Image (cartoon, rainbow over all chains, first blue to last red; front, side, top):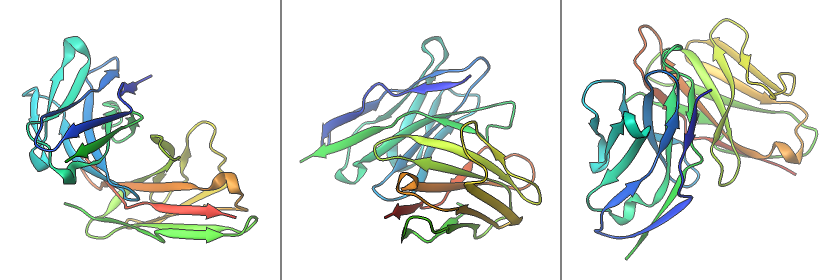
Length: 115
Length: 117
């Protein structure tokens, strides 16, 4: 069965500093990987996704993520964090057999941005 | 991007009553919709997969008689929490997949917060 681990429950970053959110997955085949962001009381917004090809994926709002098969990781990065980035971030892996429609989510990482 | 809308956003009900939550794809047709439940400070747990015109597929541990799902059209799926109890209080989120060849992306609704008194 597939699983996703986000080892950091919450992270505090100063505004303007760089950010890296960790995500490790467990899946037997080629994974389909996603990062979503959720603001309080809101649904999820897709930041970026990886299906194949270039392992460095660019997303919206200046985010990027790098797929590293050898480390089973898909860490999310941003070079300079803005206060509006404070939210909860979820990493997810999709089942390739079902067309990556069924997602398994990590427990999320809450990002706090300090002035 | 495609828009998925849920209604209501917030609902408070008395224990024992039933509550219906709607999930609509506003600008695309969705053959498949998914219902998730999210507890405070927790991840999203898939409850069921809803396919237009057929019965929903429930995840293990989810009571299908408790959480009734209907996907009557390509743009609407409903989740009815029957005889709600306080332990059913949660944040329910739906997502939808575009009909046709798989696009590889799910679009999420804004969620519906249910509080059962």
